Image 1 (cartoon, rainbow, N blue to C red):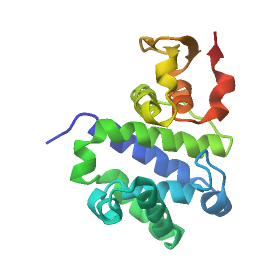
Image 2: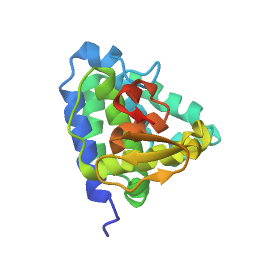
Image 3: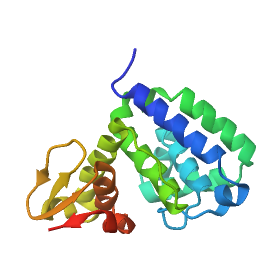
Image 4: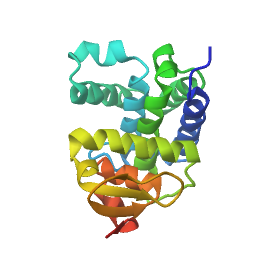
Length: 193
């Protein structure tokens, strides 16, 4: 059975694996990302941990930050080669829970892929479904992170209807989504009316 967004999730996971495979050892182990205090290796560990919600989150009493840090810690103890082998399997064979939640996970994955690339000063053309998922992730997270979604009219310049009321903010779906999740370094890419 195919779930909605399952193919997009796999494709974005493969793109992330390709990005990580192209990093030097120093970039992989200690390069900057937009996730404070996490290197690309740590971001990958967190994302892989999402495939195992019972083992990763239930084990920590659903304390999300503790569970995320434990997944990153686990990735730090694995050699790069072994972790990348695991990542390739993770990309090609998502768990049943991830396949069924692909529409939700695609946004988180897209945000974190951009965290790695932007942290290292790199860019890419973000595929349309991923850009929409990043925007949707930003809308959802902003409700409890910073409430920006409640105070702004968000106007994507690349194919989504405007959302919200208040001070107008214009930009790509990706930049708006990243800003909504608290990645303030993207603010220069946005236009505030």
